[in-house]
Image 1 (cartoon, one colour):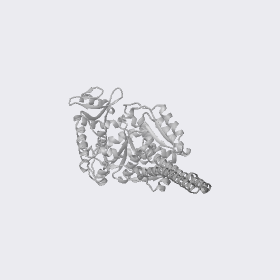
Image 2: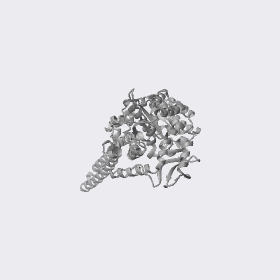
Image 3: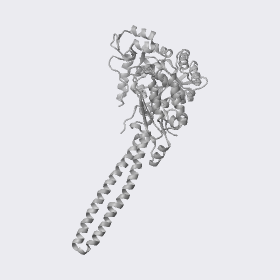
Length: 516
């Protein structure tokens, strides 16, 4: 019996003690009262958006944050190369669609995309995977410095050169490819660091739909989190202990806890003078990372350089929701699993936990993929869920059939040869006729019939193998579902902005197969 996932348990209301609001309870979410400094927030976000030349619609929405009844839909992702996997677009679009659905003129609801520029795992953001029109796989990989916050990584000319080299060879109509290449070059030239380039690309695609992108390392935005970090420093292990307690509750439901906090581990990182980001530990008296810190030392760092003290995964959403009037968090399955460990951390910071809303899930279906799926009667989801094993079994059975035919023909010929020898022995005068008949049978069974059968099975075998290979390339690249592996830019390169326009017609939270 398949194990229930955290997402399934959440949606079926099995984990209510671990979250504040039931799945899809948007009425309760809208009724949540949020007391934040909206004017200061709006000014800080507008300053960032102006610095990255955000589209007018996004700027107008950022100014609407100052509205006394404004609320926000929060989502976000690491600053992956070429926007990372397609689910980056899924999250951003879901927030846009949900904000549009819940917003009213008297109480605007605004979509916020948090760029995880504070994270320092460069291995997770340096790769991009794309499949071109000739079904050639392109793996673009950059050599990024390790240990630095992604938002502190400078852009080097060779990064763009590597990307343009790959995408120039990418087989796609020039009418679609040229504008994307120009957009990448323009945004790269205007950017000062790795996460800013990510933001500018995302603004280029979705800013005109009102998406507000925020970078928590930008000075005016980083300053907003000082109060929340100071609160955390008052009892630096309390949030870690709350997360560990929730881990035990999850495990009592036979679910794996996504977040674990070791002894003395806080939920804060500090970036040292060497530019490396390290976890802060607390032994009950002093903090330590690259060196020893007192609470007063850290408060001084906050006062002079607030961007240097940043939250771990177990605190990031809490700090964001402390300064934004968040009522909904749009989350991927993995994020939702660890958000189930954060309810008590929200309570420690006296913030009402927003509604957890699973992001929309989409699989792009190109014309040849659609034809193959229809031929075998599969949906993309079924193939990704294991139906492709049926095709592999069919291939295996075909190979077995070839072996059975060969073995059977060999046995038949042995029997015929024995029968012929018996006939000749009984009546030597039949020898010429017997051997002539045996030769004719041998020709039919060993040559003509096997050739026809082998040709037919080989054609079926090749077709099936090709179809299986194509489906895996499109739907399960490297054994990973498409939206979690390939960059959405591949569809813009091959089909133009119609791919994005189709995604924007979907509904938040749904599971879709999008035909292009």
